[in-house]
Amino acid sequence: MHSDTIAALSSGALPSGVAVIRVSGPDAADTMQRLCGSVPPERRASLRTLKGAEGAVIDRAIVLFFPGPGTVTGEDLAEFHLHGGRAVVSACLEAITAAVGTRLAEAGEFTRRAFENGRIDLTEAEGLADLIAAETEGQHTAAILQASGTLRALYEGWAQRLTEARARLEASFDFSDEGDVGEDVADHVQLDVASIVAEIRAHLQKADRGEILRSGFKVAIVGAPNAGKSSLLNALADREVAIVTEVPGTTRDVIEATLDLGGIPVRLSDTAGIRETADRVEAIGVERAREVMARADLVLALVDPHHGHGPLARFSELLSHVKHPMMVAAEASHEDLAEGTAKGRRRILTVRTKADRPAPTGLSARFSNEWSDFRFDFSISARTGEGLDALTAKIAELAVAAAGLDGEKNAGEAAIPLRNRQRELVMETLHILEEFVGNATLAPEIGAETLRRAADTLGRLTGKVGVEDLLDVIFSQFCIGK
Ligand SMILES: Nc1nc2c(c(=O)[nH]1)N(C=O)[C@@H](CNc1ccc(C(=O)N[C@@H](CCC(=O)O)C(=O)O)cc1)CN2
Ligand SMILES: Nc1nc2c(ncn2[C@@H]2O[C@H](COP(=O)(O)OP(=O)(O)OP(=O)(O)O)[C@@H](O)[C@H]2O)c(=O)[nH]1
Ligand SMILES: [Mg+2]
Image (tube, rainbow, N blue to C red):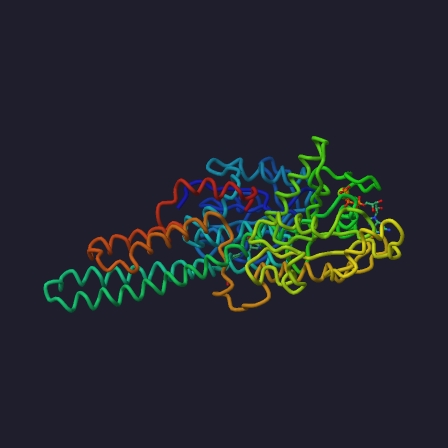
């Protein structure tokens, strides 16, 4: 338990309709007494006139007192729901911190106390941080699950089973001269640990989804210069994010816009038109376009068949820069293209642009002929909006599927490691357990020690084991007042 009492504005930017100041610690009741003249009935909203040291009225406000340990922080907690003016709030904070032993809270300090007092574990604290940062429905859902303990239950469950397995192994040392008994136990423990390993592997496979929920589903808009890439970005973002001109080679840098599609943050990157170029700046842009394409979860390959941006073979060459095992448009069937990720490849959608313009004739027909038989996934016009809804719906569908929000509804399965910290420790646990599984020659004493290390690593995930060094990093990422 802490001996000092902390206070902070826990609501948002001022001025606001109402501002909430929270006070947590042994002097919370005292603070209430000083400012209100009495401590209101526990856990009941009460209207009080708050006064400062000299008796000046600070505000007439709603106040609440929650006695510990049944509170968010596990300590006595006082709340002042004030009129949200800057002077009101600063006068109130000043009056609160006038007492010796009461000070302003640091970022994340309320949540840190909740953790230190055993009200929540580290994964739940991380879930709370994500909950506050959540901007889309998908992020919201994942954060709620994590804040309410789905990861905790999973990791504590594994740690528990490992501890039991180790206990059985250790008990078997004593029987080792009785031959069979020891071997029998060892076999069973091997089976148990193997099934935990399988569960951990399945859990880690969801890490990509966590990454998508946290940092967004990445969509690269690529194609030859002038294909209409920037126009598509602007149309989807519904604002003029990128410069559009009739000059091929207009876009040189990567331009990003984030949309909320199906509850998933979708990060669109408009890129420089890909071509051989002598222009140094444009060449760098083309290189960046290739990098963006290689990292994308989805590639939108745009073609304006009116333009002589080269034959189908060049388009294939373009798509060959997609990092995953290659699919060449000229060779791949339409179905192959559409089934991109289903076969473990990056997904590519081919998009014909400028659908509002009449079919090409004359000179340009020479180039477009090649495309007349090509079956595009989508045909759009940034100018008229034609086809944009269908394309958007497809992107949303793919983003939702990639984030894994379309299937499993039960909480255990939906538990996704969202953070690098979580992924790395789960990975470490897996590697330790892999030393154990299938290693029949391992001496039981060493096996038991291996299981202990794995359980400890899980303990670092939930914060049960040696994480002092981590706490400053984790909690400083919160805002003041949380
Ligand atoms: N005004 C206010 N609103 C808030 C918070 C707060 O601190 N103050 N919270 C801050 O994060 C969240 C709510 N979190 C809370 C968590 C536990 C308890 C609590 O009193 N728990 C007790 C009793 C539970 C019960 O009555 O069922 C307990 O767990 O023992 C209160 C709020 C969001 N809204
Ligand atoms: N008619 C018509 N013109 C379009 C459409 N989309 C884009 N354009 C025109 O095509 C030209 C090129 O558009 P951009 O969006 O700048 O093309 P880009 O692919 O970003 O080109 P770079 O940045 O040079 O690689 C501009 O003159 C646009 O007005 C469309 O749907 N219909
Ligand atoms: Mg452009």
